[in-house]
Amino acid sequence: MKVLSIESSGETASVALVSEEGTLGEFNLNYKKQHSVLLMPMLQTLLKDLNISIEEIDGFTVSKGPGSFTGLRIGMATVKGLSMGSGKPCVSVSSLDALAYNIFTQSGIICSMMDALRNNVYSCIYTYENGELKPLTEYMALSLEELVEILTKYNEKIHFVGDGALLHSDYLKANFKDSIFAPKHLNFPRASALGELGLKELLKGNHDSLNISAPIYLRKPQAEREYDKKMGK
Image (cartoon, rainbow, N blue to C red):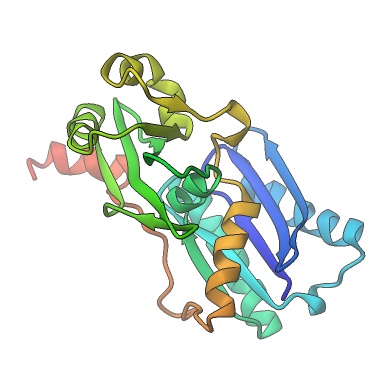
């Protein structure tokens, strides 16, 4: 099965083609977050370089967030259009899951962290069981201090990954002396990781309904939050 994957939840636009044999190709581009301009040319170039037509794709995977509100909507709309036009299934996967899947460890826990501005983060905590990634928490939007309080309860070595971990690394190191931080090239959700997770779901026969599939934002857009604050809500 060949699965085309799109990740657009953050600064980096990422597209990949994966199969049971592994990643066939991947493009990652960090350029001013212009996903509406970048994604389709990246997809077209990827398929052209691999000499594969869109008709040969068996399914699609897209990031459902959390992350950039605009980026998520662009990625979701692109994949829904490709899925509807081709009649092939699609599945959405959390960007936090994809981040955690960049890391493999036999010990400790993995903490995915995405910057949510104003000392807040999107996060989820994971472990591996029998080689499979397993979430230990729900997807969370919370302050850095609240996340640290949760992490201290595990009393285990922590593997941090994501732009939120990079941004707050000094604070995290001060609280967790034995923590491990992913190298910079793994600190964004990659379409290849997203695609491999989506491939597993598609092989099980799981897929999204195009009518109800939607991004997970975890919190309201900034403009809406400011309006609620102004109105005293």
